[in-house]
Amino acid sequence: MSKLTIVMFSGDLDKSMAAMIIANGAAASGWDVTIFYTMWGTPLLRDPNKKAPKPKDTMGRMFGMMLPNGPDNLKLSKMNMLGLGTSMMKGRMSAKNVKTIRGMMEDAKELGVKFLICDLTMNIMGLQKEEFSDIVDDFVGVGTYLDAAEKAEVNLFI
Amino acid sequence: MADETIDVKGLSCPQPLVETTKKLRKMEIGKTLEIIGDHGPSKKEIPDSMAKQGQQVLSVEDKDGIWQIVVRKVR
Image (tube, rainbow over all chains, first blue to last red; front, side, top):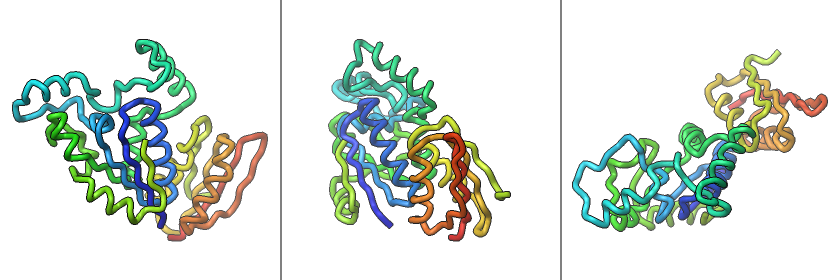
């Protein structure tokens, strides 16, 4: 069975859409797929209905407020135009029957895609495990990502 | 007649393939699935992917841009 890994570094709507389409295309063809969420990609897996149980320091609170709270409120990396471009893109995606990032993540989970979170990014941004969505499989270091990447034929950094 | 049918008309890449695989995984071995859609590249990509996954592609037909693919789940 072919294997794919994706390092999801960015937290933009367009780049996340590209990553999820590739991941789901591969998973639907029987590939073993792992996505490692790091830096700006990490907050894509936050669950807006969950709260951090432990108090955060000032920087942690600032990160918590400024970072996206899950996959529903992302911006385009280009032509955002103060949100106008993003809302036009979302309208366009819906008109063309393209699933939302959340919908694509649910499909990915059903197809067996593994969702890993970078533990270092969590520390830097002051994010806690309890804030993340149930689709997350594990919180890991780069070593776990490299193990998966070493065995994979296709490794992407998005 | 196939045992099960899904209609993926209007869906775009890679959704027709995703829906096909999701459906097929829930079916019993030996059953057949008919997929009806209109997304151009999927007409080739679904049979290719199914064959690679060891499934049996029984037919691919196209009429005025609406295609029909029949697959038997063999594993």
